Length: 102
Image (tube, rainbow, N blue to C red; front, top):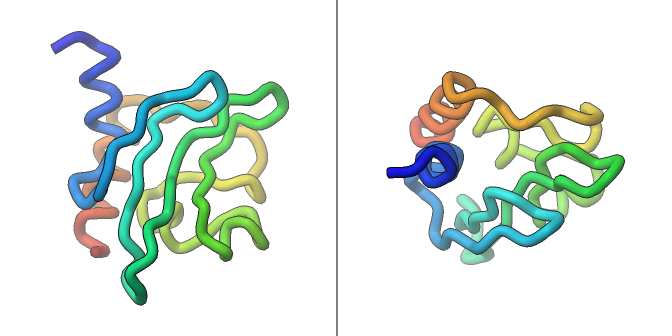
């Protein structure tokens, strides 16, 4: 398995409903199911100039710049400012936290 594929699969939790292709702006995109409804929310890393943070399509993240979905995975949303993509150990810790919180 090449390094990009290993990094991508370790960033995406096992409870992801759908893995989406990267775009120029959004990286490591996937969908998760809401715990309280049938809605799907998209989580991705916003790589646009001036961004550099994780985003979720849920109303909480849109309004407040972070949400329970990002926090459960140990990811930093817009309200925390610019963050680099995590290293491999942080990715695995975040993935385990999300799996155990589901």
